[in-house]
Length: 213
Image (cartoon, rainbow, N blue to C red; front, side):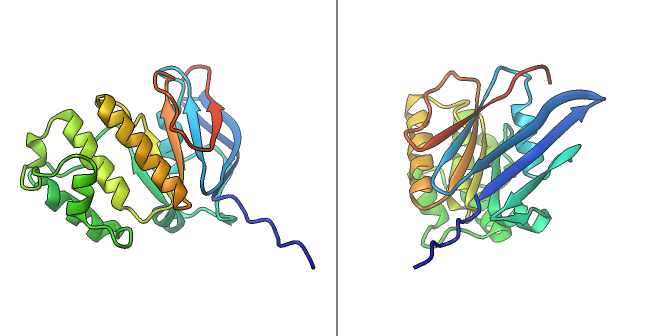
């Protein structure tokens, strides 16, 4: 009997470097994330945590380095299929209702099998707000609606930029439960944090960023 070949990490990054106005923001960085685990990206304000996630998502161009998804070089199509990004802004259409926003986003990006927008709203604690316009929601409710979008996404890799911001303790526990369930299904998550919150109770790697951004 021969040993089966090792499977490539879901995400592998080598030598990733980013500069702004000729000033280094981060890098070179080398890390990998497997299905079933989370990578916590820690560091104080201004060290490049948000920038790193935006580079991984393809919203910013790295100065150097390679990025592979399942062992293949990550192009725009590969990123769109494999990654779901939750940034500081809610990325919602203000004049659509909460449910219309989720249906619109599912139409663009697809959705997880056996999951429906109204079910996702109930999971994140927004049952009864289906017909509320997004602009009428509080900051915490908008964050919960964005989390519902993540839950519906079929992408295996979640990029979560400060996902606990604007949430109360119940909301923080919700994020941890969602991450745990996503990892149990074989997904992975990159989570930025400045260290104020406990890590979700999952298999976790750490990446500490430092210096000035």
